Length: 348
Ligand SMILES: Nc1ncnc2c1ncn2[C@@H]1O[C@H](COP(=O)(O)OP(=O)(O)OP(=O)(O)O)[C@@H](O)[C@H]1O
Figure 1 (cartoon, helix red, strand yellow):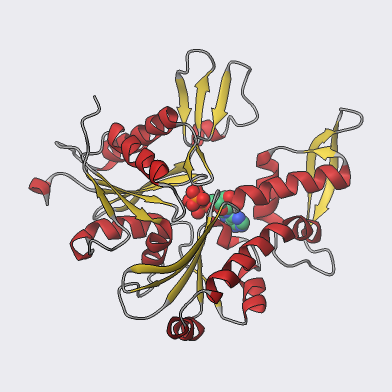
Figure 2 (cartoon, rainbow, N blue to C red; figure 1 turned 90 degrees about the horizontal axis):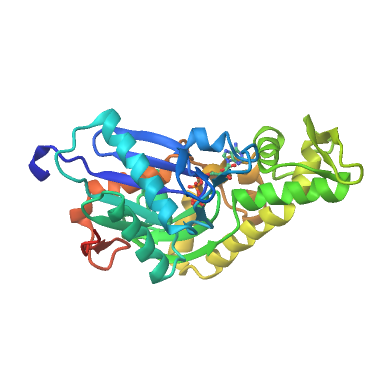
């Protein structure tokens, strides 16, 4: 393999988190996709965990931004700088790189050719020798251990920060899929809006996400369920205020988002060829991505589709692991597969 030195990498360039998978070593970097930058000079002050801690707390001259939005690049230069930082971190910590690595990056299945090209170019600009792309649901299915290469239908629902990807896969290819720009971030927004409407309280993104992680659920609890005290700014007095929020309230806030995901699964099932539907009925639906960890989401989806729904064991890692595994098996991919090779034109 490339003189025995170069380690190829799989990059799960997510809206919420970026993971780097190094061939033979597994996941070596796992950090939030956040960059803190100085206004005016655009000098990067921090990336990843350090930058995330700054969200909502930065002084006026520093902004913490998420350069990926809805699964695609919203800010090209910052994304390239962020990828460069993560690839460098992976190589500094774990490997010797006498030559540039080949990098396989995942992209949502619904991206345009321009959006895909931007990801490839940003990866090359960040230091990759060659960039390859793989569609996210295929990577998620490989990472979740589904038999994607067999002549049998597998269904995967990957719920990330920016996108939800629903796909039926057979013989290494995507047969039907839906990509929905509704996922974890929209859930956080829904919680912010709900608390604003119902309690006249303004809370930040991080508080909303914490509520979702700690007491969120896709099914309301008749008894109210768990509760948490949260602090925010009163919209009437402008003063800080504390209130108590229950699981049932969060479930109510998330209902619309959860229904959008369920509808997308139903639509995909409606468009699935009957033989493959039968396979899915036998094996069930596999949920991956951080959003799949929302409490009772699998139960709710199961009730709505009358099928078994399983949450992958390593839900947050599936796409990165699948992306890395795909790179290891690149020889197995046919030209019609979901992987496209991008030959770099010299940039600089
Ligand atoms: N236990 C949990 N319950 C609910 N949501 C969770 C949980 N853990 C993580 N999440 C959410 O999962 C999302 C991140 O998931 P993931 O890392 O798979 O996304 P991503 O790959 O960065 O995004 P995308 O695939 O859309 O680009 C965040 O919105 C996060 O809040």
